Image 1 (tube, one colour):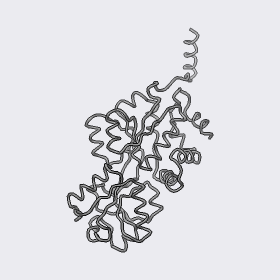
Image 2: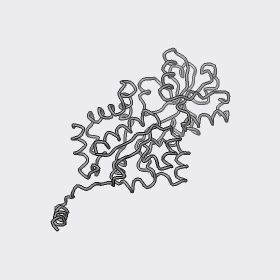
Image 3: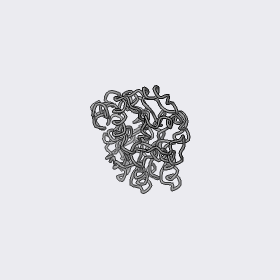
Image 4: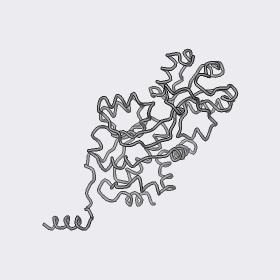
Length: 312
C-alpha cells in the first residue's frame, strides 16, 4: 500500500519514478558501418551518447550490401547511412520485404558524384561526364571508386557497361575510401588527371580543390548528386525500444559538423570515439536537442546523466 501511495504522490506532483524506459532486450544496440568516415563519425557520436545513457552499442563494420542484408535478417538494429538516391535499390528491397522503418532524415545538403582536381579540369576543359571520353589518355581510362559492392560503384559500372558518355572501354578501379583518396592526392600533387567519386560532407573538400562534374543525373541524381541521408531501423525495433528510438529520431547532423568530425579522424589521426567526444565537449549545446525527451536506460533524465558522465 505504501508503494502505491508513493507512486500516486509522484504522479500528482507531476514527477515520475525512475523506471527503465526500454526493456532489457534493448540495451544492446547494433549499428552498421560500411567503412565510410562520415558514418564512422556519426556512429561514434551515437555510441558515445548511448554509452553515457547506459546502453551498450555495438558497431559492426559491414559492406553496404552485407549491412543491408544483416538489417533484413534482423541482425542490425540501426543504420545511419542510407544515402538516397544512391542506395535506392537497397531501400526498395528493404521496403518490399517490410524489413526496415525510417526513423529520420539525419542530414541534408549532401552530394555525391564524380569529381576531378580543379587544375586538371581547367587544363583539359572537363566539367561534365560527357567531357571525359575525349581525354581518355590523360585519365588512363580509369574511374576510381570506393569499396567493392558499394551502390555508387554499381552505378558507375552500369554506366560503363552501357557505354554511356562514350566510356564503354573505361575501367572502374574499386578500392576503399582511403585508398581512393590517397590515389587522388598523389595525382593532384604530380599534376596528373584523375576522376573519382567525391562527396560532401567530407574534408576532401577542404584538402583538395575539386570540380564536381555535371551531367551524371541519371546515375547520381540532379544537383551534382544532391543527396539526403536517412536513419533506418529494422522493422519493429522502434516500437520495442521507444526511448532509444526517440534518441535516434533526435540525432540529426549538419555538413559542417560532419566535416569537422571527419577532419579529426582523417587529418589528425584521431579514432572515431575520440573525435566524437572532443567535438561534443567543444559543442555541448548540441546535447539539448539530441537528448530532448530521452532518458537513460534506467529511466533517469538523459541530458543530466550524459553531462555528468562526459564531464560537461
